[in-house]
Length: 118
Length: 110
Image (tube, rainbow over all chains, first blue to last red; front, side):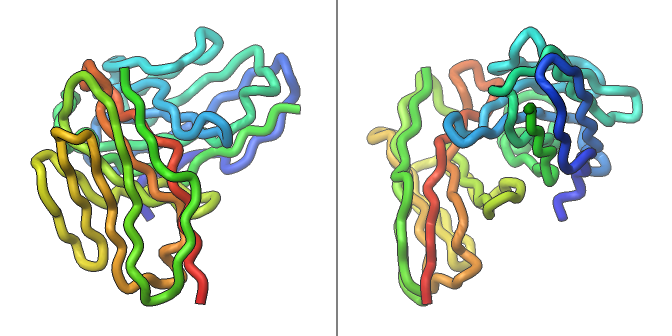
């Protein structure tokens, strides 16, 4: 158990819909990262938040957005869903000061949310 | 940009030693990281190398050659539970994200 929690575990929804994925980081970690993992693309970095502020953006679509709340939990919002958005979505957290050092790269992943768009 | 290459699949038997290679191309370099991911589960951090050479951690060791853009993960005394995908990762050029390889799926048989 990494200490990172994600809900829900599974989500099935239709094209065009909007969903929200939730993540709580390990106790004491201020950084949260979101990743998408599909069979053909592998693990892709989407976005990072540190202590409530966006710190880095990866391959995140404009239809997707995220935020980190004062209690440090984070939510990833996916809208206008398409079939291709079906994937495993992981949240990870790390210690460190929000910069990119070894402490940031040693990330602890949650169990993931499996999203299926039909 | 970044490019990471790993073999797609490998097989080995219990008790054996296996070496999983990773080659990378990156403009900057802040270290190379290995993660293990069992099917349907979350990736877990295994090791990192910043300097050239071998880092040993129990049955697992990781090697890095920065001049060659090459790393390997060495797994000794293989056990069935080592059957998993092994992901090699490097920071992107800006140092703001981890770029993962597509992973090497290792199957350990008895």
